[in-house]
Amino acid sequence: MACNESGASTSAGNPEMLDCTTAMRMLWDFLDGHLADADDAAVRAHMDRCSHCFPHAQFGELVLKAVAAQRAAPEQSSSLRERVLSRLRLEGYDEL
Ligand SMILES: [Zn+2]
Image (cartoon, rainbow, N blue to C red; front, side, top):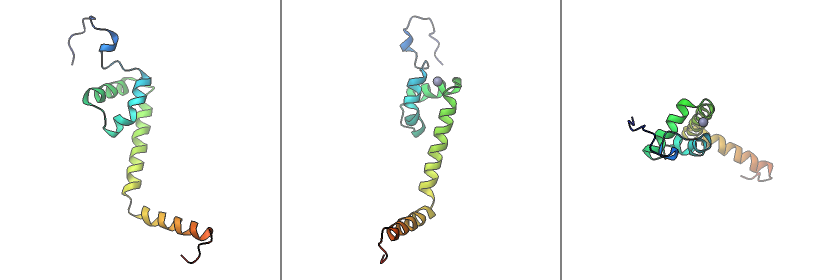
């Protein structure tokens, strides 16, 4: 990667040196694929090295997968419909 590690630049100049707060703030955009290439690489590099943030990234990935699976499940609409209808019956809308 970068070969110019002469120490001439400031600490803010290294895109791979994210702190945990910044990495966590960018996590959801990272998982959604919304980050620019440089930011995406920076978050990825941080997750690779940081044992504190890595579980958060894994958890976030699981949540996104679960949400996507919910959206994709064809039976979800009918069971939601059932729940809405039974709720309406409970509220007294028996004629529906
Ligand atoms: Zn971290």
